[in-house]
Length: 209
Image (cartoon, rainbow, N blue to C red; front, side):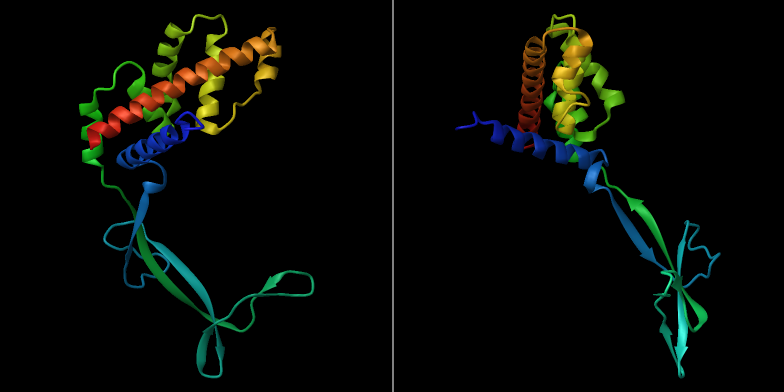
């Protein structure tokens, strides 16, 4: 393959990450369940849940009510004409989340060792505070360099965000080192992290079946 299989690796990582994100209640898999109830008025309550009431302004044209849309006057100010009453609607919106027990069980059965589980969950959930210290610890043990911590930080930002907060050349200038040397270090670290991530995703999906 022309890209050395990187596209397939990316697809595998994304698939594993989406499954785990859903299992942990993160990302786009978090949805809201909406329960519609009777009209409650502005201070109503529905089955002891926090309710949201939406009020619409009504006007009258002849004997029929209509929802009167606001218009702008010559000064650009929104105004409402012919309003006679309010019409209220109330509903209850409660977050609904069902843990993916199969996904979580597969994660336990995969027994991802070293930094593999942490980097996969970091990528899936974005929980830097919880998982990055584990990944960074293993990274520092593997990368013997005075600027390993900075290179690890820049590399993981490129993986998670698409780019680091600071360019490699600017980071090298901050550290007082040659830009070419720091670029080489950061890219080698990024390759290592991506290799860990790919191995974790493959092992996880193989266990999930």
